[in-house]
Structures are given as C-alpha cells and as structure tokens.
Length: 150
Length: 192
Image (cartoon, rainbow over all chains, first blue to last red; front, side, top):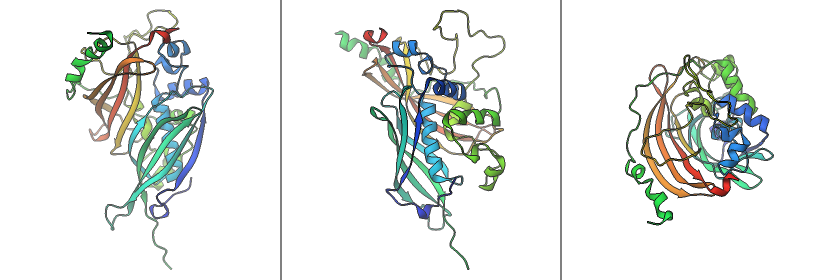
C-alpha cells in the first residue's frame, strides 16, 4: 500500500474507486463479522415485510467500504479522525455492485510547525440506482514528506 | 384529528424528550478483549487488505503498539454479547422468530409508539484515539439528539438520533458518535 504525503495531495484529487459486488453470501459473512444480526440483512422474507426489496447491506459494512477506499488512498501512516454525513439513501441489495468513490475537498495544516496535515475527502457510494450512501466526508491526517537532504 | 396527524402526534413525547439522557448505567465492558482473529474476520467480507489491521510489525513501523482495529469496526467491538450463560435466546422454532434479546435493537425509552421496523441510516463519528488488539471497550450514553417523524417509501415512523461514546479499558474516550435510526411501521403494501 502506497504511503501518501500531505504535500503530495491537491484539492480535487480523486481516490481510486473500489467496487464491492454484493451477494447473499457476502452479506451473511458481513453480519457474522460485524455482529449486526438484524434479520433485514440476511432474511429476505423479513426484509421484504419491512418494505425493502430484498436483504440489504448493513451500515457497518457500508462504513467499512468507505474505510477501505480511504485507507487505500492515504496509506498506513494516515489517521482517520472523523466521518460525517454518512447517510444511507437507498438500499444496497444482492445482485448489485456498490462502488465507493471520493474526491479531496479540503487540505490544511493547523500550524506551520506540525509534522502532519489534514485533508477532508468527500466520499459516496453508488449502485445501479445512483448514489446510495452519502455524500459524506472523511477527515484524515497525513504525514508531511520530509525535505530531501544531500 | 385525522389519521395523517395521529401517527405524527404519537411521536410527540419523543420530540419533547430531545436532550434527555436515557442511559442511566451501570455500564459493563464487553465480554472479551479484542482479538486479532476477530479483526481478521471483520476484514474478510470487505476484502480489506491492509497490514495495519493484520500485521503487528507493520503497525509498529508507523508508531502503533499493536494491530490497529479498523475505525469502522469499533462499534462492533463495543457490542455486548448476544448470549450469556444462563440465558435463552431461541425459545421457538418459528422460521422468522427473532431472538428473545439482542444488543442491536437500539434504545427503547417507553415513550415511543409501537413500531416493527428498524434500521440505522446515519453516522457521524469522531475517532479520538486508536483502538488496538488487546483493548476492551464499553459503550455508554444514549442522549436523544433529534426526533423527526417522517413518512418514507418504506413506512411511517421517526428518525431518532442518539449520541454516545465508546471508552477503552483505561476509560479514555476513543469514539464519540451520533447514530440515527429510522423506527417505523411498514406500509401495508410492503407486507405482501
């Protein structure tokens, strides 16, 4: 995983899109892993009776998708400090693919002496029907690339 | 009062309770410390290939003392156990019966009207400190921040926003979060 430095990032930079094909198998694995056993996420009868078209991805899984996409952009030394505006807009069901995209919206440093800088990335998820989650914002810190010395 | 107004009026006690702290405690830490195997399993459905969450040595190269728990997994590792010795979760063989008790049913105050549907919609989270393998977490607080009655495509209910925090075994706050749930009764056509 590439390490990104604050002074290499510009407002408007796009993060690499990450695709998550959704299957019943994947949603059941996710429920077991993130412990959200609400039946709407693994039982189609219950999901349909609740008004949804089918079982759908839980919000922990969807937040994990955002984290993976952001982490792949920032690298190991980046630190995620805030997530805001995460809003589930439409259901993400098996048979569809969720694609997470993002774009750097802000970049700043709190002090010229700091060895880190902040960026805020606008992040959203799309499926076949449009934007399904967000757009929200993920704020991270990145290290500054040290100056080259001879 | 018309039916269109009655269902909204039923949420008024919750609207009036905005600002109230509904978590009187006492609080208990989760059943287990966070284990590397549980973190690894969390990564699997995400195909989340990141050494920070799987390799202690790699985590140490960027200043961490141990494997870092993904930020999105912190609420999972702050959940109470599904079952504890002496308890009974499954007391019927009815196909779609739900367990007698679940930690993911959200806060119930007694002020809200009866509803059958429930799902999370929004998260706003401040990650204040990293969480590591070996930590043990506790979630506390349930302050009602907002109650917005609304009819949506799936039914009539209300968006309820709650504020809470998660602390580690040193009682350091690691996360502050606002979570919104939609509690509702599905439209009758939804049941077909």
